[in-house]
Image 1 (cartoon, rainbow, N blue to C red):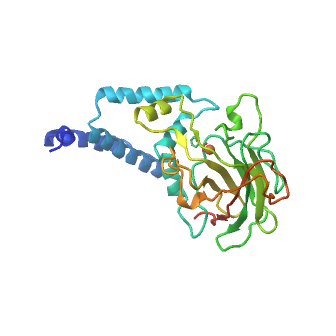
Image 2: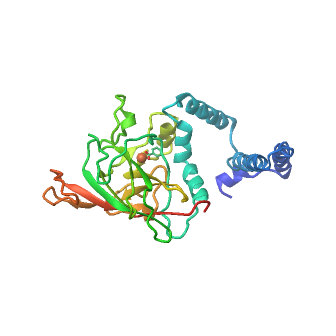
Image 3: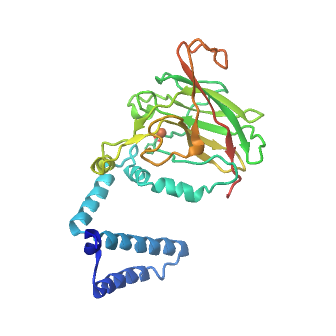
Length: 300
Ligand code: BEZ
Ligand code: FE
């Protein structure tokens, strides 16, 4: 018997005591008037109790857990949401996305939302530039928005946002700048294009309890390089996703488990001398990526 198995072995009487408690707690929700709430609470109790029993949680460890959650609460405010970050690094956000965005035909896959989306980002015309002074390599992004039958979705609203080459979103600066984010609308043929920045890797906010947990467990806070999209169109499922950079060394270890193979794209590199697709002279090496977006029907 392994050391862990020996530690976990409990007598039949002890097991009966533990199981009785779980039954009692589940039973306390029996008269819950909302059937969905009842199901969620009873299942939560089942799994939490199973966890405590599985690891034979010590009282000291239980206290540490409570202290951890308390400090996550203390650091959380209007700008910082440590509980979502915790959900992200435990893969709970991604699993919730998986459960709620089942693969549908050739529809583009969803991934995590992240904490850096801002409502009312400026509108840019097709071919416009989202950088607004954010430093980084210019990157021409183009593609189409269609439904799963290949019909273009004219007027689809495309929100895009990303970190600069130093790894910061505009909202992480304190001067109120708006940079590296915008929205635009697909044209009559469902086409869109804009200038963004070639994505670079950056860490999630790791100066709080979640960062301490990553450090204590030997995990990296780094996200794979990505560019965020949210695409909405009447009568179609809203898509929240990113595209990732093929060849990025962090694709396999993205700390929030957001990478899906279908979202990894080729960012072709071009020298400064190469003519840009819109005739602009970027004056430095630039990249180009294609991302064709397919929206699923609603309720799928
Ligand atoms: C991000 O994409 O920027 C992000 C996602 C989840 C947690 C933290 C950051
Ligand atoms: Fe991000």
